[in-house]
Length: 259
Length: 259
Image 1 (cartoon, rainbow over the protein chains, first blue to last red):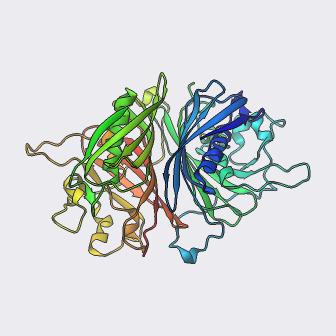
Image 2 (spheres, each protein chain N blue to C red):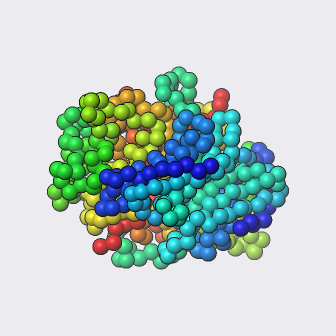
């Protein structure tokens, strides 16, 4: 199955499309091909940078099961070369997670942050932020945004709120389970807050597990890095909804910036 | 490219082949097809249980780059249906990791455990352990192995040593970077140590990042679970070599046992 898509202008960081945006384009096509409403686990390997213009998503079914359907895909650029290669399992996630239906164990809590209203929106115009900051309403924890004024918090951590921006009518689109994938690759790199070179941190691989459909409202996100070794680093993400439920968990492998 | 393989007898848990063993079969074929010596990031989606008998691995190249080569693959059972679907990036990893060559940040330490010699080997014959316990030399931390006598440590954690067993000549084969993949799915589930049903914990997805080639000697491994929600759980793994270096990091998404 082949799906046509478009990398729109304005979703870039220095000319290269944001990785979470490319992931969402591919995952939407994969979801449609799977016939299931929600991504459960999606892995993307990042092969080449994406530029504005037409793209296509080639999806191959792998297994159609009772509970899950698995598909693999390549997101192809205008020249037909793969930008992302992906593997995903799709299913039906709960939106009214009832703990009584399942065994529960939660050994963590959403990050403590000033409220969405109190955190300053990270706008493209206001500072030297990537163009795609106009496309998302990203509000960083004040302690973690010090890198934008050349300081370091000292902790390889990035916390903040993620929402879609207000439309002309003052309304916001709610984030769905495809949007959750996008949220896991929308924040500045964790290592901007430690004594490492600030530069492009190329993603090699990103896996997101979506654990539930998010309740309406801005999402609390936290990204941390524990191991920078051998030129690689991992970035672990947690996304929590307005009701305090973990809705997505992510890990990416990335390359340490040269410098 | 198509590679022939064999699921040998004795690698099973109640008749189904161990997931890490299947992963290693597939990853070895992917590595050979990639022309690179080491797996850097490999994701496997588990679709059907593997039975002893012939299997094949169908590998498709995705990108051949300067630093990395990416391939995707399906591990097919005797009837041609996929057991695993995989996506991997391969390259050349360091075996003499020199911190001076790279920026380093390590915010964790290997698990503290009694020595390899002090930990009791987990043998198939000695207790009700899976058949494949004869194929690996797995030695659990005494605090975490209490589940085998019906107790619970109370922490969703499983620590232990991983090595290949001694051969007839008293020598052990050293674990290579394909063996590391296998190590990340060789331990009993973390949740056997908490108040959840003890049963089959089916893996949906397993991603392993190999960070370096391990030094000779048994590997220290630690697996933890922080979120059991909505019928899913993740299991995060860390594998450390004899010199105290992190050599692999893994995460799997699995289903909570019914019961």
